Each structure stands twice: as C-alpha cells, then as structure tokens.
Image 1 (spheres, rainbow, N blue to C red):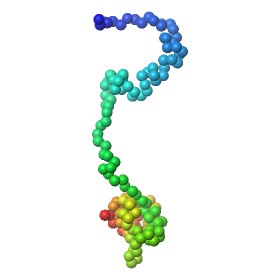
Image 2 (tube, rainbow, N blue to C red):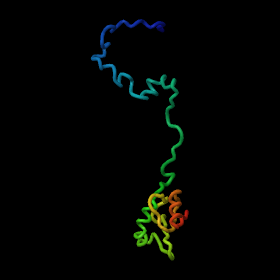
Image 3 (spheres, rainbow, N blue to C red):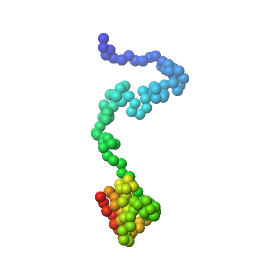
Image 4 (spheres, rainbow, N blue to C red):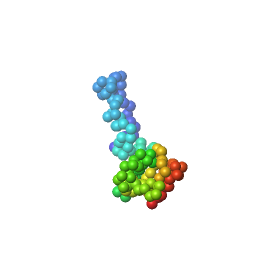
Length: 144
C-alpha cells in the first residue's frame, strides 16, 4: 500500500553520530554518491534533468588519418642552415639568387621567427610575418 505521509523520524535523535560510527563517518564522497558530476546518468539523474545537462557524444571529430599534419620551420632556421642545405643540394644557386625548396625537406609551412636573408623560398604555406620578412630582405616567397 502507498504511504501517504512520512512518519516523523524519532530514531537517533540526540545521538551525535546517527549510527555512522565516528563523527567523520558520513561526510566524504562515498556517502555523497560521488564527487562533481558523478552519477548524473544513474543515481543523480533527476538532478541532472533539472539543470539540463546533456550526455553522450555530440558532433563529429575528423579522423586523424584524413588530414596530413603540417610540418613547419622558422625562417631563421633556414638562414642558419643555408650553407649545409647548399652542400646537400636542397638549396640551389642560380646566378646571384639562392632558391630553397622546403618540400625536399618534408616541410609544408614557413614561419616568421628569426632573421631572413635575400633568397627565394618555395613552400606550400607561409605565415604573414614570414612573407613580410622575406620581402623586406629582398627575397621571394613562392607558394605551390
């Protein structure tokens, strides 16, 4: 039969611990049913409905294999490595110009940290600061 009225609790009145042992016995996370959002889909479900919390995965995450990671290099590093790049054949001298092809290094983007020399750089992407520094030094930024 359904109970219409709750009886007044008379047990444990006047006792300090209410049957939970020592005073710290009924205070921690286990007694509360967890910490934070714990039990939001189980024992705290009604509370989570009231505050309007959503559960489960939302949206779409692109798989990592679908996009290739961008490898970047600073313009200062390129100027420091110019002598070794010329020896390796990655950079070439045509007339008075030095042409560096970053695709041979496996690098897709050139960033603008460091000092730039007068040279032509071939890359897939350039940052705004890298283009500005190259042009200021008298070089050329070619995108492929």
